Length: 330
Image (cartoon, rainbow, N blue to C red; front, side, top):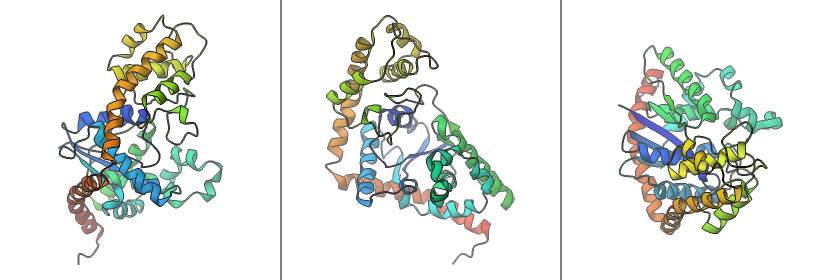
């Protein structure tokens, strides 16, 4: 059996990078695999959050999932905090994770920066909770971006450590699924940085909630270069290359086809056509999100039912984990 698990944090608006790099891939997977997609609100609180904003963001992410094509009848959609297996297994797996493994995690170093001594235990142990997210469902595959591959490798190491401790191959070793095309959509202001919800400049990203005029304005202002024509060269022309990747992904053609199409185009012409393609593709999603957010009772019901389905999968796993750990069943 192939079981897929992945998740997105409910912090800030979802953007084009989230959609092309993750959610569209999930939509294609949901009918091919047993699929579990989680709004990872426990991960979100590794950094300070406003509670009311977190509640709203969780609903917005759920609305985006549904508007993009995830079907609650074909996959499981739920908030991480609604299933206690995540935190319980996170603690148990933490007791099988050497600190040396966590010290090698580059994402903690990047997020903590110079304030490492003041960073929370939650931020430091983030990858262990991520392993618990996956292993609580005995997921076999995890669609992730290239930047998360190290965390999946750690999840495999943690699963192996637990298996050796209990003397049996209890947890499967999850395999990452890394989408090669459009896996890393970069900032519109800096082609060397990944498009991010946390970037201070809203012009660095296309939000799924942006209207047509905003999308056109953002692409018009996107950073370009002074080289004649449009060509793909990540090293020498990162911004041009990023825009070509976005166009190719939205138009569902190869990068080579897109590069040939615009080889003699000016940036102004290319950006206008890119904006037109983006608006045509994203406008229905934005409209459906707005419609769904008017009915929070429906969104909450989808999440509640998803949490019940997720719990039904995770609880038998946790019963076995408790038994293997020697915990008394009362």
